[in-house]
Length: 356
Ligand SMILES: *[C@@H]1O[C@H](CO)[C@@H](O)[C@H](O)[C@H]1NC(C)=O
Ligand SMILES: *[C@@H]1O[C@H](CO)[C@@H](O)[C@H](O)[C@H]1NC(C)=O
Ligand SMILES: *[C@@H]1O[C@H](CO)[C@@H](O)[C@H](O)[C@H]1NC(C)=O
Ligand SMILES: *[C@@H]1O[C@H](CO)[C@@H](O)[C@H](O)[C@H]1NC(C)=O
Image (cartoon, rainbow, N blue to C red; front, side, top):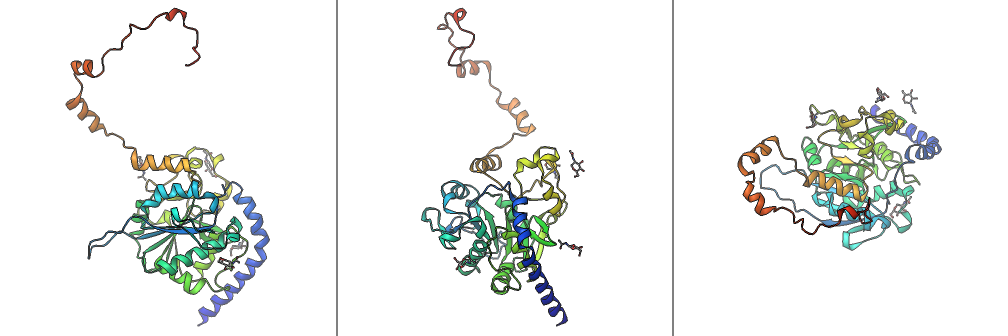
């Protein structure tokens, strides 16, 4: 009882802080998010992808519903690329936008006027409401990503396999502003079924527990407030795998981390991160899950490097020397010498022919 009253007064205090800091947040937005490539935030769509297969009585891999926030301007570019790459590996993929779009199964969750970056918090809330109403009982985990996030779904499934979806869990890249913890939104975050249940039944409607929509793009910060007020556990992905303390959801473009110099890491990231920010190849877990600021080109690059490119082992190289090295006669047959009889007048060749 006392604890409840204490919590309420803390909540009121928090609401007070919120109001007081609204102006500061606007400034923060400019200070911290200037480098943000504006993904559009608009409607959502649904589509079925991979069917979940599971043998009876066998533990099945976690079923993950992916909710990707997008906007009408990004459908042909980023949303289509998500659909064609990592989105295929979700148990179910939904795009949340401000207009329906059948071909990708995009669903409108807010009014066309409510699709801008400053309405992101409302779009996130309404997106989760849509997902809750239509799929709340059907999936174990609910991912919120942006249309410029690239996900490695298998690594996410592995990470989530260590948690029970019926416990209240909120997982991602943990940050803090104004002593409020939250998971970076651009790096994506995941709610367990139980966490989504608490968000929808306890936080969503309450102005005391959960900030009501304002013209604010900082949906991740607001989500942090709502979830800590309804007893959800914040799991920093850097702490979620034994023996691997590296971050797994990268809030910056991976390229920013890979240069072994501090100039590419903004100071705010060090100030706001819970896990250590390192640069170079040690920056990120070998089992990383999410990369932010992915362009279309970058998504296809990730897709090729992660799912297509294979590297031969030393053994395979030796094996080939021993078993299938080509003989001289085969070399002659398959790769005959070039016909040089047509080469004439090389002495007349200009220094650099036009068509070189
Ligand atoms: C949030 O979106 C819903 C659904 O479009 C709408 O009814 C509501 O007015 C919006 N709220 C704000 C504050 O924009
Ligand atoms: C965060 O909490 C500390 C310790 O209570 C306090 O000193 C500091 O002023 C707080 N910062 C903000 C921005 O609220
Ligand atoms: C980067 O900054 C950190 C602390 O801010 C420092 O420990 C580290 O040596 C710096 N690294 C380089 C390569 O300058
Ligand atoms: C990550 O992979 C690289 C390359 O295989 C390896 O050298 C490194 O030790 C790995 N890091 C960890 C923490 O396992």
